[in-house]
Amino acid sequence: MSRVRKHPLRSLTDEERQVLEQLVHARSERADVVTWARELLAVAEGKTYVDAATLVGRRSDEAVSKLVARFNQDGLSALEPHGKGGPKPTYDTAARERILAEARRTPDPQQDGTATWSLMTLRNALRRAPDGLPNVSTYTIAQVLHAAGFRWVAARSWCDTGKAVRVRCSGTVTVCDPDAEAKKKSH
Image (cartoon, rainbow, N blue to C red; front, side, top):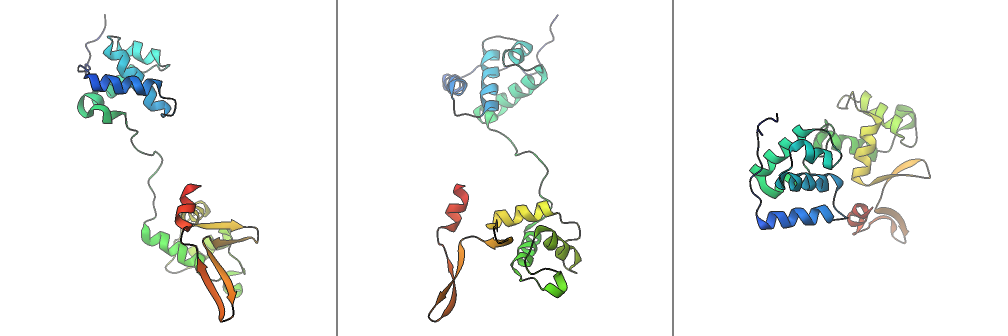
């Protein structure tokens, strides 16, 4: 004997059904969104939650039940991916700025033991500093540097992309590429 559905699916409007049909056949849509659309259409056709889950290659009827409850409450916005996953960043804007300030500082060979920054020497300098970050990892430093536009170059150093030092008659000048941000986001 089957259980009574805790969250029965409300009747779909014509527009909702049309959008779900388009999502099912979309080749450029995310796989999880297509799966959710297929599950909702199966339930709308009268299939049980177990049958809807089996139809898309899943086992959990509870997941289908939660999807139906979300759809009943939010409509088509329930199909939008929610959350990026993974842990939340532990370093705030001030900590990221502290990492960037240290990376922009020219290392002192006597104090830092290096003439160019590597992730390890940068990490050690940040951990030793009185206003530094005692638990920062090289992974976090690399993520912050990449997000800010720094790249590891063949000269074995980190450099700020979009900026170049040029020699002019009047002396050396730093030239900034006005399209640097757009170029960074396109990759």
